[in-house]
Amino acid sequence: MSTKKVTKKELLGKASELGIKGAAKLRKESLIHTIQIAEGNSDCFNRIDNCAVSPCLYRAECQA
Image (spheres, rainbow, N blue to C red):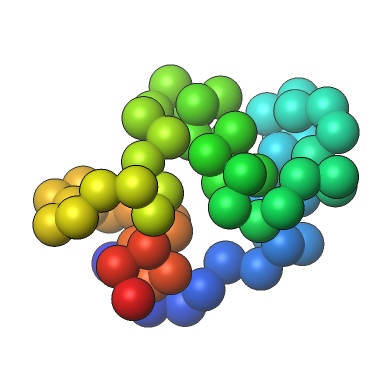
């Protein structure tokens, strides 16, 4: 489980790998939601309490 926050630069790299267009214009939270959807996951970042999803790249920020 990661305790390190993900940087915008890392998110932009991931977005590029996933073919997401216009990623640089998105706020960090919106970018994470977009990535989650592109990966086939729920866009749950900062939207639910008591998350049981593990491992999750965004957990350090989401459950802070």
